[in-house]
Image (cartoon, one colour):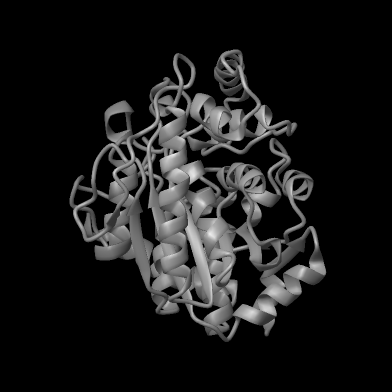
Length: 357
């Protein structure tokens, strides 16, 4: 079991060990929730796309890349302006190497992906720096739909992994965490976390909060992914183990889920060491403050890559996303591969993408 050396456990370590023990010989299912917040259109807030117009294509393109190995709504896979690939590359490598099935759910993406997916009919979130993200009834719909989807998917598996793609989502997550009373410092898709800009947006959004009802708070300053995934977690955790695959956004999901109820015994967060080691954020303490669930962190070993595009993840670009950390953890548990083996496979995929472009 030498792959366990690539894991670090935080929070309730005993719970983390039990969680790993329970799921390692079970079935995994990866659910990929795509969404959108117009907050990401504020200049300088995100790197999740080459420019302002292409950002809206990032979530559906991530979904298509996971399914096909290439994208249909855009020509190339989602990249930063200087050509660093989507963390979806890590997710795809992980899922394929372990034959873990996955499904895409559209929970408010501006653009629909060109593949079979679960459609919720939720609309995208508005820019929280200037207006409310959603109405209270849209939040309530998102929770209800999440509960339906979560229950269905959890009944098909022993461990439901939930990942997301929502450009600008760390900013709405920060607003939600702050408004629910947590002193959050969140990660970013760029090494130079645009903290001042995020705080500016969040502070102007928080001024509009006029109720301490969780639904109303999410409606004012959140995004559709947060209530939808919280709904999924609340019902799925009654039926199976659930791994929230992600960093900052999943702490916001957790904070809201703790208001609507979920089963802590069956829940863990799975992420990369690039999130848990990020000094500009307080991820580990935040999870502990919100709920007594374990964090499982994996070091995918990308700093040893021969490709600068893969090394970039270990240098603070993207860090996490498209459920990468949780997918890598699940694939290692299922196959017994360690991070050296994972890196070898990720490099093969990187090579395929960038020599065929």
